[in-house]
Image 1 (cartoon, rainbow, N blue to C red):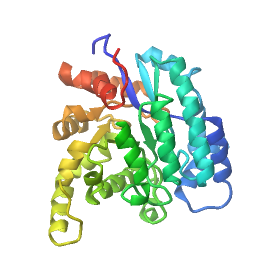
Image 2 (image 1 turned 180 degrees about the vertical axis):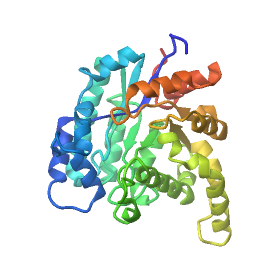
Image 3 (image 1 turned 90 degrees about the vertical axis):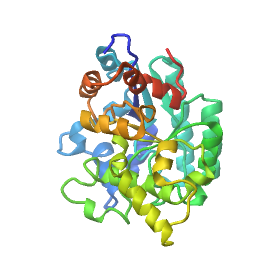
Length: 345
């Protein structure tokens, strides 16, 4: 890879002490919520214990300059697209969530203004209060100059195909800003078989959860109402590129027999038109080549998933990936610049 190739990593987790403190309070006490169990391991764990606490993700989330930036420098990563890590503000009551989203956006904008060549950011919003969320989304783009939005999938077990959340989609479409739908733990109605063998999080459950979300959006006709809405999903598309033929075929059958609403386009067409995917946490060259060939090079972006994934293997992966110069420029920075309105270098 050329030494001058710009590297923009597009799913890079971050947090603020105020959100961390609120999550610490939220997860204390007995619970069967997968989100609370997972967050307890990050925000309220004994660092000497086993589990997520031993991996010390929280320090990586709260840090920007002490460790993250020097590691970026050492590995030649030019920019992190930062976003408030899952579950963001979506476990809180509406007032708390709205206030913390605004605070996080203010602090993120400060980081981006301080180091505009190194950090860009995705704004948080609180779907618990959709109309207030839409106002915050407008502020985040128009006043704070952030680069898009982060949504940590379901809100109280509900998805964006529910019309009550459509003020958020209307705002994103009007602003021309992409919503990155990031995983969180499965809802209570989905979690049962995922609770054993470590399947509840990144191993399997996260992909199942986000995949369910976006298939609901496509099958439910969301993109007929918002045809210009752009959605980003990570982890090489949460398996959807690999299943899209069957999803598309079975949805067409469901429409024909009245089990799904008639839509203007097919699921395959919506996925091509309204979605982009990142490589975050999937460093498999065969998977990347398939995804590019299936949905097009203009729809695939490189990402690390820091601090949950280490930086160096992700950099080595994209450096070694066999592709054309045009593909490499698109993967490493061109698509990120276009989708997330990042100024070209």
